[in-house]
Amino acid sequence: SIPLSQQITLPNGITYEQPTGLFIDGEFVASRQHKTFEVINPSTEEEITHVYEARDDDVELAVEAAERAFNSSWSEADPEFRGKVLYKLADLIERDAEILAGIESLDNGKSLLCSRYDVNLVAKYIRSCAGWADKVYGQVIETGNTHFNYTRREPIGICGQIIPWNFPLLMWSWKIGPALATGNTVVLKQAESTPLSALYGAKLLQEAGLPKGVVNIVSGFGKIVGEKISRHPKIKKIAFTGSTATGRHIMKAAAESNLKKVTLELGGKSPNIVFNDADIKKTVQNLITGIYFNSGEVCCAGSRIYVQDGIYDELLAEFKRSIEELKVGNPFEEGTFQGPQTSQMQLDKILSYVKIGLDEGATLVTGGERLGDKGYFVKPTVFADVKENSRIVKEEIFGPIATVSKFSTVDEVIKYANDSNYGLAAGIHTTDINKAIDVSNRVKAGTVWVNTYNDFHQQVPFGGYGESGIGREMGADALDNYTQIKAVRISI
Ligand code: NAD
Image (cartoon, rainbow, N blue to C red; front, side, top):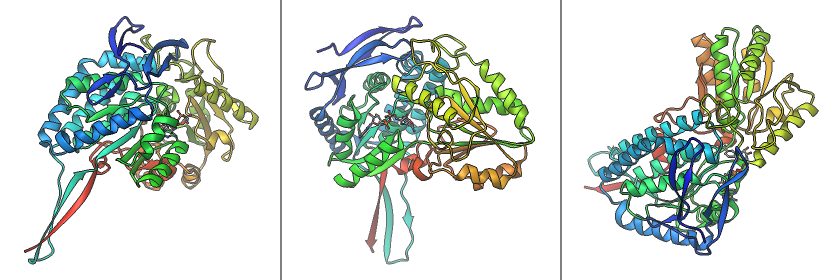
């Protein structure tokens, strides 16, 4: 057994109270079997703390609590009340922004620069969901004078939500925000390597006055808790962010159990295309944000860079120079751009792709090595002279490795860009608006960024084409994933 919370002092001197229990029925509790697991600091490879680990019986309790909450207080609540709780939550996130940013940098390893970006977007997104709560509309449908027809958007019920380790708090907000605004209840499992911020967020939910049982957090492992959530007959919907392989598995489990509604936000290998007429300095900054932001652990990372032949040499030289100036290291030091990778597994995966790239005959332009021998740090890496069908161009690496290829014509680069099973995002860099619109239309991706990259806004939907996912998060479209339409036809 461990205590249900622990005081933690962050490397920047901030001390806070970290919940370690599961969050079930409005309370932090020990797991039934009193199992715990260790949380590791990826910058030092040392233990941060232990948290309680859920098993099947804990998930059962969480589902029962979510069911009671759905049937009593929440789904039928005045939408204004749901909005009020979410507005309060957004305020609390802003109040504790530096604690939350510190938790993310400690647990995930991302630089404070990235954590602060995340927390800022989390607060904005939760506030945006608060605003939606009393704006969920149905329709009146005219079919002549014999009938009156209308539709209602009703909540789905208990939603299972499984989130990854690359944006622990941001994904928590993308999941719970629209679910709560529309009157659903939640059983959420965060990633086992980054469990801390979701638990701190649960404390803020308590303080915001969320009725008990509306959100339940069951920290634990994918193969146990994730599996149980995906197959639970009382859970009516599952929302998942993570790898395409696990997404496919979850969809199968959802189909085999009770045909849960499924939304998936999965992997990517996004093209980032630079035309001859692009502004080189600005584009290089966008390419860096595209692939090295969040240590490259971004599902929509602009990992395949295509540069038109007229500026290829100049751009590559400027890109290399700028990358080599990036500060990689302690995520808590001001000015650090890139912290460590989140886990040993990710570090090993990235280094294995460096070897694959070299074996495939690509030219290593910069990086390609681990930094230091403690912590999962790796240098920002670029490969050039890559073959289009090579593994480093085709497979999601999920780290700070970009490939750079040369192209001549628009048709050629569209062919390269679309030659992928993924379709999460794409970048286009040009000063020609006609070309920007033409290429945006032809590229197969759920998000297209023109002269920017990894540039999110809470009102703009995000999600994938192809094997990058199903459904959209953020914006009004996210509400569709958490409501079902009831049509009422009345004979008059
Ligand atoms: P993962 O997809 O397996 O893990 C994501 C979440 O799914 C975690 O909470 C995990 O516990 C859970 N999970 C794992 N197996 C499950 C199962 N059988 N049933 C239900 N839930 C399950 O990803 P990973 O193993 O942590 O990382 C592997 C690779 O996935 C990475 O290298 C990266 O390429 C990719 N990835 C992509 C994203 C993304 O946002 N697109 C996020 C994380 C990882």
